[in-house]
Length: 173
Image 1 (cartoon, helix red, strand yellow):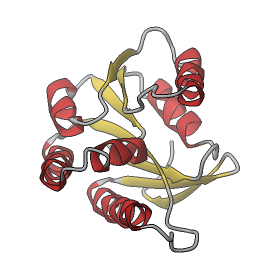
Image 2 (image 1 turned 90 degrees about the vertical axis):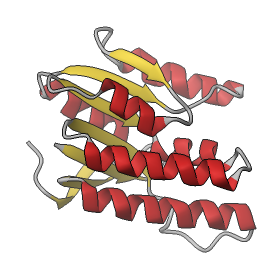
Image 3 (image 1 turned 45 degrees about the vertical axis):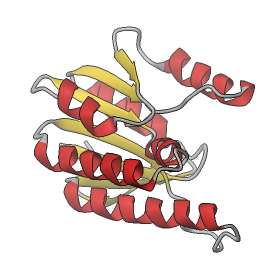
């Protein structure tokens, strides 16, 4: 089953994704998109690492997410991708529109082609005011488009706020 978990910062979305992965009784591969480019992000990454089971494999991939999904998906494995908005930020940050378009298309194609379990975690950033800067407006727009595409492709979509899941599509176990 493919699952998209959306929520704000520190809403509990990663904890829910990790719970679903643990309860799946499948081998788990955690796909991390964050890059430790500063001390604060390094701390966030360390926090996530510390709470993951040591038996889970971890792949750190900031850009080529579609290729990683294709390479590591299998029947007995659940892929947990955390987080799509960091991936989006990385992809937009290349300042190469053609590269972004290729990676975006590759991700969506992989999601539609891979018939195995994937849990995506992403920040919902479209609930606030319209950002003032061109890049931040593009980021919010692209995140909204990505979430809509993934929500259509996933069997389950959950919004998390204050640690409470609101199921928007499908059911939680």
